[in-house]
Amino acid sequence: MTRFFIISLLLYGAINAGIKEEAEKTVKSFFGSGFKMEMIKYNIPYDIKNGLEKKYRQRFFRNNLYLWKIYQGDTLHAIAVMDNVYGKSLPITFLVIFDSNTKVIHVEIIKYRESYGGTVKEKGWLDQFRGRDASSSFEFGKEINSISGATISAGSVTKGIAKLTELISIIKSDL
Amino acid sequence: MRFYFSLMLFFVFGLTLIAQTDEFFESKATIGGYGELHYNYLKAENTNASKTLDFHRFVTFLSYNFNEKWSFKSEVELEHNFVHSGEGELELEQAYVEYRYADWFGFQAGVILPSIGLINEYHEPPLFFGVERPDYHNKIIPTTWFGNGIAFYGNYKSFDYKLTIMEGLNSDKFSESNAIRSGRAKGYKANAEDLLYNLRVDYLGFTGLKIGASYSYNNASGDTSQNAVSIYEVHTSYQRNNLYFVFEYGNIDYEKYNLRKSNGFYFDLGYDVSELLNWKTKVIPFVRYSDYNTAASTVTGGDSEKSNHYLYWMVGCSVKPIDKIVFKIDYGMRTKELGSQKTTLFNLGVGYMF
Image (cartoon, rainbow over all chains, first blue to last red; front, side, top):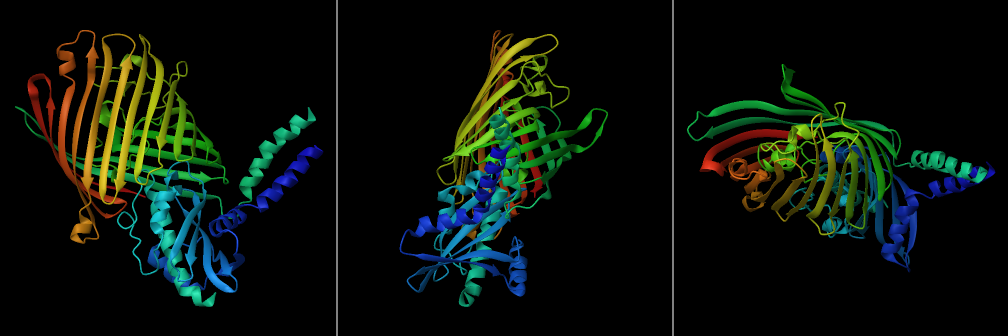
C-alpha cells in the first residue's frame, strides 16, 4: 500500500509537470540554447476578448492565457502563446510562436484528445501558418487547406490561430 | 502480491488522477449533427421517371467527456422523416464508451463503426461529392455500417490505425444484387458467435493526402447458412490547393455458394474554382466514374454477373457558402452491363453538419 502512495505522489508530481511544461519544452527545443524565457499568465482585457470572440465566433478557453516571452540577451525575440479550442467534442491544446513582428514562426499541437482527425498534428499542415500575421487571410479551405476527415478540428484550430495572431498584434506593445 | 495490488491501484486510480488534473480540460457535454434533403429524378430506359423529395437523414450527435481519458459518444439517426410500417429507419448508429490513453492507444466499446473505406466513418454530407453517397458505398462497402463491438485505435508517426472486433454478418442475407449489405445486423440481437475482425491502416504524412487500406474477415453465419467472407479495400484522398481527388477499390470474397466475389471502385476529381472567380463561396465542380459488380464472380456465371455490373458516369457541383453547409447538384448515366440498359439520374440536395 505504501508503494501505491509513493507511486501516486510521484504521479501527482508528473501531473503538475504536465501540459505547461510540455509547451515550454516545445519552445526550448524550437529556439535551442542562447535564449531565456519568462512565462506570464496574461489576463486578456475584456473588450479585446469580447471583440475577438465575436469576430471569430469562437471563445477563448479562459480569460487568461499562458504566454512566454523569449529573450535573446535583453531583447524580446519572440512570443509563444498557448490556448485551447474545441474539436468535435474535446479540447485541442495548441501553441503558437510569433517573432518580434508578430508573424507566426511555428505552430504545434500540444495535446490532441479526439480519436478522429489527428491529422491536424501533422507538421506539413501546421507549416501553412508560418509567415502569416494579423493582416493575412486565414480562410479555412482556401488559404489554409482543409483536411478530409478532420474538418471540424482543422477549422477550429485555424480559427484559434487566427484569433491569437490578431490578439498578439493588439497587445504586443503591452508585453 | 502487495506489489501487484499496488500496481493495479496505480493503473486504476493513478491514470484517472492524471486525467482529472489537466487544467486545459473541463468535463462537458457537446451536441452536433448532420442532415440532408434530396430531390431525386431517376429514369430508366422505357420506363416512367420517378421524382422524389426525401429528407434522407437527420442525425444528432451527443457526447459527454467525463474526464480527459473517458468519454461517451453517440449518434442517433432518423432516415426518411419518420418510421411507419417498415418505411423509414430509426437507428442508434453509435453509442460507445471511449478510453484514450495516449495518441498511440485508445479503445471504444459499444455501438461502433468498423473502419472500412473512406466514407463509413466520415459520412457527413459536406464531406463527399454527389447528393447521394457513391453507389460503391452502398453496394460494395455498405455505409453506414455499424454494430456492437470494441475497437482499438491509435496514431503513431503519421500512421493511423484501428482494429475493430464486432458482431458478425448474417450470411442468409447475402445476395447477388446487394452483396453483404442486407447481412448487417445493425446491433439488433446480433451474432456474437462469429465475430467480424477489421483492421485499417492509413498513412497521413503528406499534407492533404490520406492513403490506406483495410482488411476484414468474418466467418458469417445465419439460420440456414455459413459463409466466410473476406473484404479488402484500398483508398486514397487528396485535398490541397483547391484540388480534390478520391479513389477507392473494394473486394469481397465469399467462401461458399453461388456468389463468390463482389468488387468495384470509383474515383472523384474536383476543383474549387472560387479562388479563380474571387468568390467567397466555394464552388467545386467534379466528375465521378464508378464501376461495380455485386456479383463479379459466380459459380454459374453468365447473366447473373452481367445483371449486377454497373458503370456510372457523373458530373456535378458542390457549393459551400460556409464549410459546414453544402448545396449539391449532379447528373449522371448508369449503365447495366446486361442489355446495356441505361438509367439517367439527376439529383439536387442540401446538407449540413455541426
